[in-house]
Length: 143
Image (cartoon, rainbow, N blue to C red; front, side):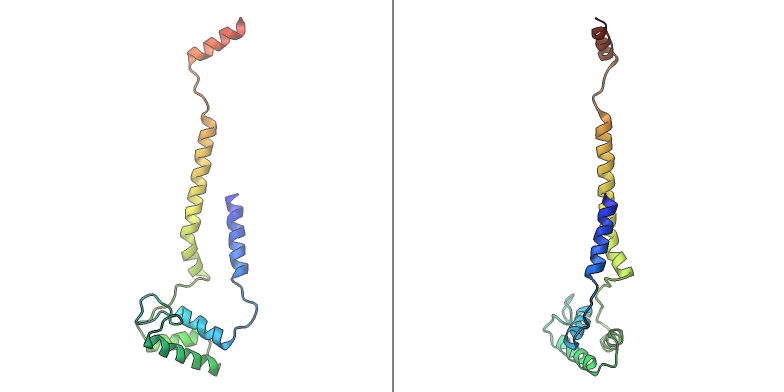
C-alpha cells in the first residue's frame, strides 16, 4: 500500500511539473531570476529582492532574454561569472529532485515499516496461557 502511494505521488509530481505552453519573455526572466540568489540578501531570489544589486541583475537578465540568443543556462552562467558570490537555487529536477526527495521517502518507508512490524507483533501476541490454565480448561472440557 505504501509503495502504491509513493508511485502515485511521484507520478502526480511528474505530471504537475511539466509545462505545456511556451513561456513569455517576462516569465522566462522571472524563472531565471528565481534560480539565482541575491548577492546582498541572504537566501532571497534575485526575482524577489529589492536590493540594488538584484535590480541590476534582473535588468541584465531581461535584456539578455529579450535578445533571444542565449539559453537560460547561458544567461545564468554569465550572471554567475559577473557575481561570483551568487549561489543557485537547489535543483528540483533529475538528481537534485532525488537529493531533496530521498529523506522524505526514507522517512515514509521507516514509518511504514515500523507500523507493519508493530501491528504484526501486536496481532501475534494474543493472551498468554499458562500450563495451569490449560489444565483447568482440559478438566472443564472432560466434565
